[in-house]
Length: 101
Image 1 (cartoon, helix red, strand yellow):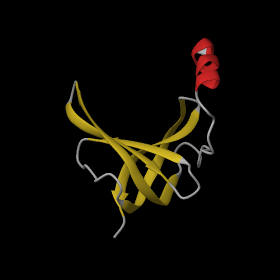
Image 2 (cartoon, one colour):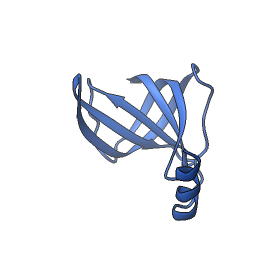
Image 3 (cartoon, one colour):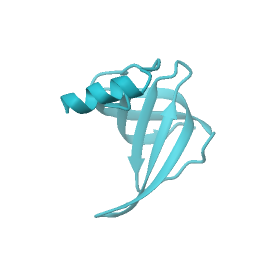
C-alpha cells in the first residue's frame, strides 16, 4: 500500500479534491456526474457514479438501483461511507444516496 501510494504520487497530479464530511455524516450536495461505470459483481449488476462538486471535490457512489446520465447536474443526499485515495486524488465514498427534488 505504501509503495502503491508513492508510485501514484509520482505519476498523478494531486488535484484540488479534498475529503468531505466525517464517516457516518449525512451530506446534501449539488454535483455533476462525471463518469458512470457499469460493473457485474457477485450480487448482479451495479453502476459506479463518479461525481464532482463545484470545488472539484470527488464523490463516488455505487448502486444497483439507479443509473444517472453523465454530465447531469443533480441535487443529492447521501451518507459518507469512507474516504479513499485513488490515483493520488481524495475521494469521498457515499452510500444510501437519494435524489432531492
